[in-house]
Image 1 (cartoon, rainbow, N blue to C red):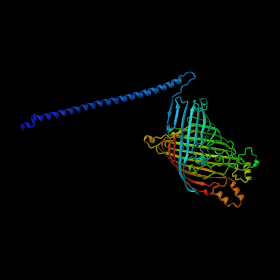
Image 2 (cartoon, rainbow, N blue to C red; image 1 turned 90 degrees about the vertical axis):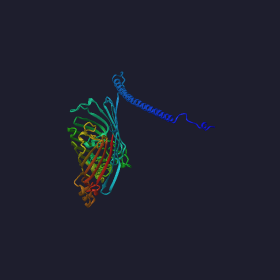
Image 3 (cartoon, rainbow, N blue to C red; image 1 turned 180 degrees about the vertical axis):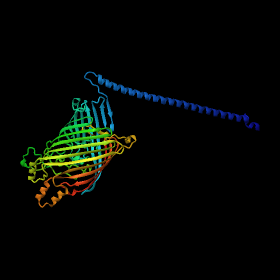
Image 4 (cartoon, rainbow, N blue to C red; image 1 turned 90 degrees about the horizontal axis):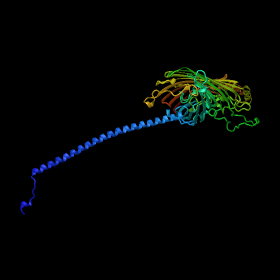
Amino acid sequence: MSPVLGRWRSPLPPLAVVAFSALAALSEAGARADTASEIRALKAAMAQQAARLRQLEIKAAAQAKDAAEAKAAAKHATNVANAAHGKAGEHAPPPVFVSLKQGGLKIETEDGANMFRVGGRMHLDGGANTHPTLGTSGNAGIRRGRLELEGRFAHYWLWRLQYEFAGGAAAIGVPGGFRDIFVGFKHPALAFMPFTKEPVILQIGQMFEPFGLEKSTSSNFNDFVERAMAVDAFAPFRNIGAAAVVHGEKWTAKAGVFTTGPQQDPALRPAPGVPVPLGVPAAAGWVPTGGGNYLDLTGRLTYAPIKEEDKLLHFGGSVRWHRPNEAIASTEARVAAPGNNIRTESNILGENLIGTPDLSCGLVRGAAGKCIKDVVVYGAELAAAYGPLSVQAEYIGARYNRDPAALARANAFGAFAPGGASLDFSGYYVYGTWYLTGESRAAAYTVSDLNGAGFGQIKIKNPVSKGGFGALELAARFSAINLNSGPFQGSYYHNLIAVAPDAFLRGAIANAGVLGGREQNVTVGLNWYPEPGVRFMANWTRVVALSAPWNRAYLDGAHPNLFVMRAQYDF
């Protein structure tokens, strides 16, 4: 084979090959550029479509909102029209409004004729105290755990039901159970009182007897963890009865007739082992220890000559006439043995330092439960506020009228029935508060409460929920109570008893008067209100003066200290 024929040669010269390769590369680059341009154009078109889609979605949402509002307005108008122009004998339900103010639930019809509310309170207490003989101790518990239902129906009828689930107050004779449970009636035909256009409200059921400012103010709004000693010792609790309440722009009046109630009288039965003497002859030796109804007539008047948003001047007075049943101290300690129920203004700690003997003559044949004829309790109150500063004070006195013949019978049987036919006890408190954050207690004053004039929730200027700190309050209180009545008191009484040469003289000294003791306390407190309905409290109480009662001479001159804190939520 020829060498020339055996070697392959390119049909194109080298220069043509190079040119062709360059042309192919340029064609491929152009194609790539066209593809990128198309992609960019496609992305721009898609972005335009997405923006248009967003605009359409926004427009559709606005149209849906308008349609929903129009539907709601049409439904509201239909309800109103139906209520106003329904057929004869037919009434379409009116529209209702729902509120969750402070966490509670309130449902009310548009015309205000009907209302239903669910509320309650939680008070969690804890602290520590010193005792003259027991040393230092502490305690924590649920002071109050309460559910409340209330409402209004058919314009004129009111009702309320409260139930206390906590037993934290059982140690002071106030166990859990029903609190307020009543029905009321408020009708324009009852607007006959002078100086006001408001009608009289009639109540029947279990409610607070109208007595005193601190007792008439809810425990949610008192400035200290516990009420003052004199209030706890003498002011009545809730009882079953009927009352009438009315108010003007600056005044209130409430009065009622009451009898036994489960809050104040948890033990209307005899003590275990002592049967009721119903139908049992006196010769059997059994004596009555309770039962039957007592009678209370109670009233309160208040007047506030100055009543402004940041200024207040309030005066008031109360009186209670109590005719007891045959109860003795074990079944009605609050009246038959005053002072034994109070716990040094720190109830969760349970420290009692004073208290009288049984003024009813106790379990004595022919005299048991019959030494007290009646008790008259009276009180005066004052409150004033100027800007963030406020003061409040009350004086309460109690006159015990007793049957001399029953006392003589009790003493003849050798019973311890000290004192004469008339006994006088008293107590008072005065305190001041200062809101460091500028709130005014005057703004919380109300005359429209069913308990009469009192204080409600303060108006917090800067709650935590709105970026503020809440309200901060400083408080200081001096309180005193005197349960002594007779010529011999304090250490003088105990020294005479100790040096008396015989039992007859010791008995004469002991029976000359009632020695329930005297106590004076100073309390300082700090309260923080982060939100309406929420409060944290801290109280330190020091007993600055103590005169020992008849049965605990070792307490004379002691100065215990008590510290209590509370976390509170009410709704």
